[in-house]
Each structure stands twice: as C-alpha cells, then as structure tokens.
Image (cartoon, rainbow over all chains, first blue to last red; front, top):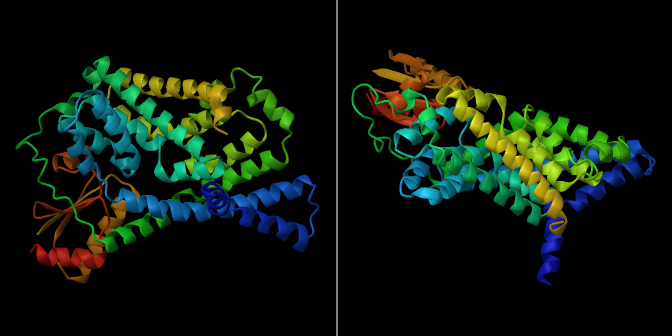
Length: 342
Length: 79
C-alpha cells in the first residue's frame, strides 16, 4: 500500500504524468498533429520537459535554498576545524553539497579555510563536492530517473570528493599552494571569530529562498531551453542506431568519450539533464550519461582559472586529473551495475 | 564616515555598490565609498564571501546584498 502511494506521488510530483498527458492531448487533439510523427514526438517532449523542469526548478531551488540558509562557509569552517583525518574529508564533502556560495567566492573560501588551519585536502574535498553534488539537481535527477540512481550519484560524488581530497593530503600537495595563501598577513593576525554570524529570521530565509529562485532561473533559463531543445532533437529526430554506435553499450570508449566531451563544456546541470534523459531513452548506458553530466558540472574553465591563482600547476593538474579519473571510473561502474538500479 | 564595499566583480557585488551609492545620495550623505576588488584585501578583512560591506572599519553585512533602505539604516546606526 505504501509503495503504491509512493509510486503515485513520484508519478504526479516528479514525473508529472498529468503534464505529459496534457501536452500530448493538446498537440494531438487540439492542434491535430499525427501522434506517430517525429515532429509530434519532438515537440511534445520539448514542451513537457521545459514546463516540468521550470516547475521543478522553482520548487526545488526554493526548498533547497531554505535548507541551505542554515549553512554558511563560516559555519562550515568552524565545524570542520573539529575533525581530523579522513573524517574531516568526509564531513567536508558532505558540507560542500549543502553550503551555498557563488563561484566568485571560491578563492576567498579556499584562502579562508587554509588560514584557519584546515588541511588542503579537506578544502579540496569541499570544493570538489560542491559543484558535483547539488541538492536541487539531485532531486531533479530523481524525478527524471529514479531515487536509487539519484542516491547512487550522491554517494559516488562524495566518494570522488573524499578520495580526491585525501589523495591530495597523502601526497603532501600543500607544498604546491601559492605562498601568499599561507603567508602571515601584514599587521594584526585576522581574528576569525570577529565576523559575527548573521542571524536569519524565518522571513529572512523565505526571502532569501525566493531571491535564489529568481537568481538561478535568471542564470540558467537559456541553458534549460537549449538542453531541452537538444534533448528533443535527439528524442524525435536522431535515429537510435547513430547514437548507439557512438555512445551505446557496444562502444567500450563511450564513457571516456562522454567525459572528455563534457569537460570543456560550461553549462548548468539543469541544462544537461534533459539531454541525459533523451540519451538514456535511446539506449545510452546510464554510466555514460552520468559521466557526461558530472564532467560538465565538476570542472569548468572559470573555476579552473580561479584555482590556478591559488595553487601551483602541479597541484592543479593533480586535482583535475583525480576528478577526471574518478568520473570515468564511476561511469564504467554504473554501466556495469546500473541495471540493478533502474 | 568611511564606507568600503568588498566585491569581486560579479553582478551582486556591483549591485551592492550601486545600492550604497544610492543610499548615500538619498541621505545627502558625504561618505567616501571605496570599492575593493583585491582578493588579499578581501581575505584580510576576514571575509570569505563577497560582497561585503564595511563601515568605519566594521563589517556590517556580507554574503548578501542589503537593499537601499537597509543600508540607510546601517549608515545611521554606525555614524
């Protein structure tokens, strides 16, 4: 009985079956399109997916932002100072997923964490998990695929973050941090407790969450439209055979290809989800698709340029290398064992 | 009074600068408003998130963009 209710909730709220039916009905019975035609399939997919993603985006960003308003980089830093060893990396990775910060704050956060005495590896665990595992996009992933896949995505993202950060510590890569980061500042030492933590009332949090919805939609709407557009073209117009030959199960290099293609791309994860959905429906392995999504979000040229300012090339290369290898390994694992999850 | 806006050039930081300048204009307030973008200066002020708003050496807001009304209240409170 519980399972039935859960499945109904999943279908109505996340998959929005009612929306899909509504869009299909509109184009078939009102506009009068041929339900078998590729044009019909492409257009219905486009409208259904765009509307669904924007509704989900708004709700999920609002909820996630409300939760995240309880986490700040300052609080995270204070919490992390209390942990040692791998636990610090694990907590760092976990906090990275729920601590919101704009990417222009990456450098101040890196320097701030380091000056507080946090090991470089812990800071990197935080910085790796942050773009990789984002609360709202995990929920969106659950809506497009299912909960098991979303959870597995989170676990794998955290593992990559923890292993990556730990490796950086184990190889004593602190030596490759730029000197100015750890140098004593001129004049007095910074009193890390001098900045009062701003207290937020419930009204503050609601306003913050609403502002985040507006801000993020303003930032990503074009990526979503483009992503759904590409997804619709794949869905309706590109023959399955083409896709399977390049990215399908028969190509042993599909994961590596998907990863390498994703890395130089700079798009928001919400834009990649509809493409991922369309590819999976055309027979691409779930691991290949997740590898593509992770590659797009984990590494971006702006964030690499910023990290380059605070660490020397060798550490930067190691960081990028760990993330790439982690994604590729994860992709193959999901392809091999993914059918247990679907 | 000395007002410093710490930012790194992203849209929010510029918005804070605009709001501060407007608040000063509306109060006919003669303050020296500095826009600081140097990373080390931002860090040395104790900030991990931008934008940051400092009045007479004290950080009064950070990590968000207070609106013009709130900035006016902050100015009056920190005279």
